[in-house]
Length: 453
Ligand SMILES: Cc1ncc(COP(=O)(O)O)c(C=O)c1O
Image (tube, rainbow, N blue to C red; front, side):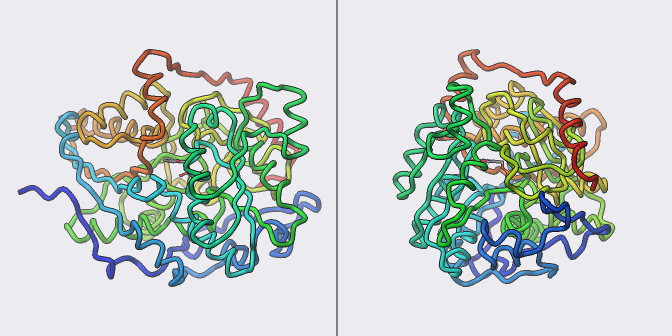
């Protein structure tokens, strides 16, 4: 009988996260204080994050122990299975083996709880009582709502308006887990009220929602902000995915030729790929591919520069690929990929040619997702469809070249709460969005005001 799933026992789950900062061949540029332009010190972030997470953000150690309190919660759904997609392979009829890490297996339905429970845990240990955050598609907001509930912390979520309207069930998940969820721009903050006064129909963006979430907690010493992607500590927590996958591949004597993930802020992609990037740094031949939307082509077209993580310019200046902090992406259904920036670690690895970025249009991604659902059964999140589109492209390339390939990708989440997007796709109401070159020119002008990384 063919082996479809590779499972680890609970004892085999890695007990440490992997920190790539210890292995990068060239150092990363530091985040900068927006006022002074100087590298950021721990105290500069103390009003926003608890100090134990700030320390982790700047931690130089290669391996970081996963606390027992986090491990206990991870065991609710980890280890996740590594599966071979035999049926999808058959459909593609290409000389490829396709393995996927099923992160849709978590209670919230995506990889997001890997960092949500870790962040809630560290906030709890630090004595924090309330956390504010933003969410795009609602995956992050729901994951953090669940994690906050587990650790007895109040949770307030600012959800990008277009997703709030498209995905009412995500809001209900957050409420079921005890959180409050507001459509962003909202009437809860100065930033939100100002945008609503100018444009009552604003679809919102992650940049706006981040500004609102930060404004919502600032000044309350018992409250902090939490980010679901982009930052070093978030990527660190997500490496549990890649470390498990590495072990699982090893168990069956396989090693990937290509590792693929979709990238919004970069966390699921980095979570799976960074342990393999480490191998690549040490001489292994492996292609690492990040898949992003053509309508929000942060890495494939955005400049590498210092820019703010949010619209109101409240975050530090981060060295990253960016489409400009005031960029409002088209209302594509992959809400979690509608972000103007990219994780500094991922951006740095793109610059160093350790990672390759590719972009896909909305219709091709849904086409890939529907093919997946009709062969493998599981319905992917629209974000995950981008990774699947990259898998299809990679398989077709292997067929053309007549080369055998082992492909590993992150199945970052299920799409059961995203069925309205599939409805729009199946009834011919979805479009591709072209991004005019003027937008890129404007992004370059925006970031030209700041120091160069
Ligand atoms: C299922 C899923 N995949 C991917 C992403 C993109 O985020 P990131 O790039 O941080 O993994 C999201 C974000 O909401 C998501 O919900």
